[in-house]
Image (cartoon, rainbow, N blue to C red; front, side, top):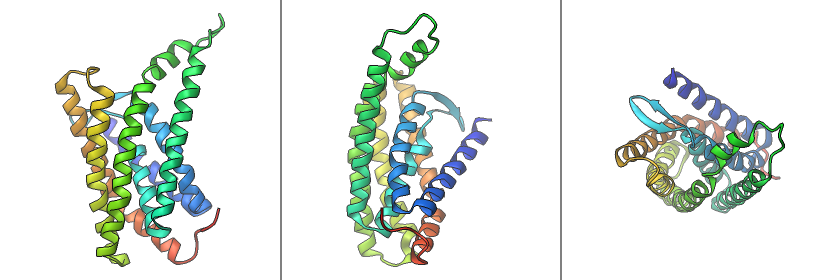
Length: 230
């Protein structure tokens, strides 16, 4: 059941990001970045069994952030990709601060949400620190690597190469940094290593499946179907 839901969620994420790009153009990708990092940092607090491994949720939606920055790099350039990273940083910091203040309020007697909110968001500062560090290094590497491979392998027929070559290493950097900073001491080491392995493998799968959507995004852009201004 979990595996089926995972593929459904994967498809829905791809559809959502492509709709955002087609309807809103560059702005849609900028909007997707805060959506992806906020949802991912909530979902990552839940662990599930997937394909025989213990894994955290949030891998899919977080990995689509790399798709968004790769589309920005391919169609608009490195400057726009780096701007998207800045938006992600800002949104995640604001989200964490606001939720910490929210759970600090003394709840009314009729309140039913405080305990659930505390359970989910009390770990958020540590997860946010892990996310910001992993996000900074992995995304900056991804943008650098995409431009590196783009210069050496230009042309639309090589999009698959630069998309995957940049993302595979970036996802590894992200998975190692996030898993150990966020969950070291929270889970036993064997579970931690399972989470690390499953996180990277699942993000790698997302990267493979997102390649056709890279081609579709570039096709729309080349045909003039995408808004290039905000």
